[in-house]
Length: 116
Length: 111
Image 1 (cartoon, chains in turn blue, yellow):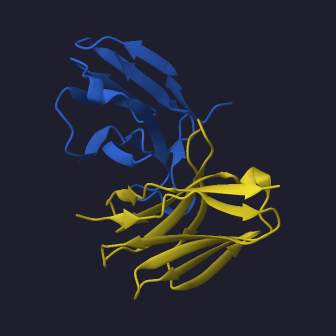
Image 2: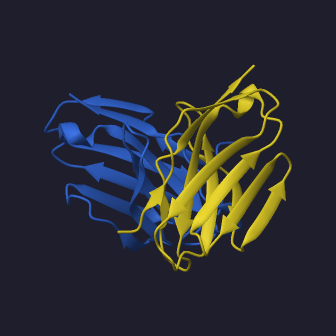
């Protein structure tokens, strides 16, 4: 039974399109995150939600809009996609807010976004 | 700018040897330190957390923390080919503060 599931796994789209990535966790965690990992493997936080409330909003273009309908779901919508948005996007959740505590983050399998 | 620095590698070690992975961080108020392992094409998974100066052992893994030197390391004893992966160091200030990841060190264990 998958703990943090993301869909889709792969997304290839043209510049200017709008796309969404969905994430669901069944761990009962209160906090969820979106991370972006670039081609050099640098993992950078984008957003964090605690029980549906936005608590971290990094310097991300406002073309990126997260939505958390409930604490088990965190979706990411991206408008007007650009070439530089190509990356792997990871959803994660944690029992403890912030660093994740002793158990850290549980990551989803990632969504590889390619903008052409 | 809070930074976490790691040598990108690859670090090549023979099977059975000790692999030593190092990480330095710039934020002196950092309180929480983590090592994640990421296999190629997979998601990161937590292998160790450490909060106090000194060593913390878990099976073949030992995390070492020196807050005065702003340095954290991971030792992998009896390295196996299955340990070949990228190891990400992550540092947090605690509370609701985010974790900052390093760019990772690629480890290759040669059979």
